[in-house]
Amino acid sequence: MALFKRRPVDAPVSAGAGAAFGVGMQVVVRLDRARYPDSMVDDPIGVITAPGDLVGSALYAPVVGKEMIWVVHFEEPFYGLDGSGPHESARVPQRCLEAAPES
Image: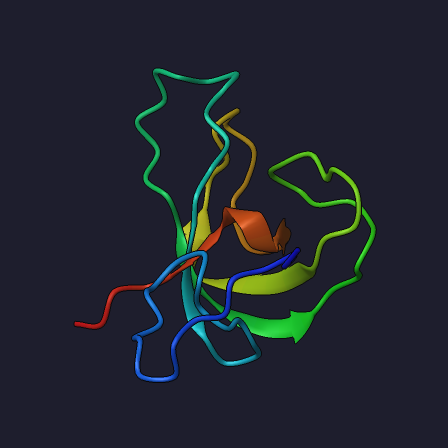
């Protein structure tokens, strides 16, 4: 029984969950809006500047189990859904990151 499905070599890697994250990558931080569903704050865009921990805390989303955390510096100061900020950077779990669309 296979535990994973192999992607064909010629299949494109889509942006978002399938993207390979790393330092220098431009990303969109998808905010957890569970507690602030009516917030008008846009998801911030930034650049990954350093790897974080495999286990640890993140600023804008609860960490569940072992997952990669990245340090993201924002293009412009970011105000959180709760009004906190301005923040220049944050430690963000990989599951909340998506590759920024190419312009």
